[in-house]
Length: 270
Image (cartoon, rainbow, N blue to C red; front, side, top):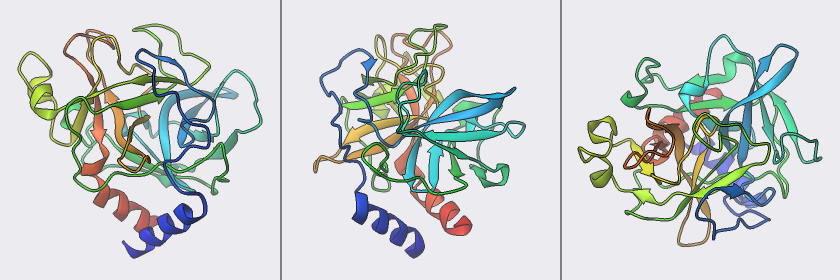
C-alpha cells in the first residue's frame, strides 16, 4: 500500500488527477463529440490486426504506467498497444503517445469468467512498457474512495469511441454522454436488470443514453464535491436487446469495490 500511495502522491503532486486542462462540456444530454482532451485519462486499447492496430476498447490511465480496463477486453491470443492523448482516431494530431504492451504485463482479475460477464470481476490492469508523458493532453484519472456508492441520478459521463447506435459504426472522434447513476435498489428490480446486477457493479443511463460496443473498458466519469473527476465505473455490458434498451442501463464494474485488488496488483508488479 505504501509503494502505491507514494506513486499516486508523486504523480498527483506534479500533475494532479481528475482535473482536465480542457474542461469537458457538462451540458450534453445525448452523446456528442467530446471537447479534445477533456477526458485526458481516456485511452484507446488497440490490438494487432494484420499489419495495423485496431481499436477494441477504452480504458483509463491511473498511474503514469498503469491502465485500468475491462477483463472482457483482453484475449490471450492478441497483441495490444495503448494510445494515450488520442482524440480523433482518423488523423495524427500530435498529442498521441503509442505505448506497446507485453503479454506478461496484462493482469485480469482472477474471479473473471469469460463465459458469464454477469458474474462480475470484469476488471483488468495493464502495465505499460514505459511511462506515459503527462502533460495537458495526458493526465491521470482519480480512483474513488474504497466502497463509495453514488446516489440515484448522480450525474456522470461515459466517454469512448463506441458505436453510435446498436450495430452502427465506430466514430473517429471521442464521444461523451451524460449517464446519471441508477442506484442498486432500482437497477436490481425485476423489470430492470434483476439479479444480473451484482453489488460490485454500478448502473448508469438507460433508454436514450447508453454505452455501446467499443466503449467497453472505458470510464464512467463522476465529479466529486471538490471538482475532481473520478473513474467510478469500467464499462462492462449492455442488454442483448440493444445498447439503449428501456430499463436496461449500461452496467459498469464499480471501481470502488476493487481498490484493494488494484493496490495489490500494482504493488506486486511495480
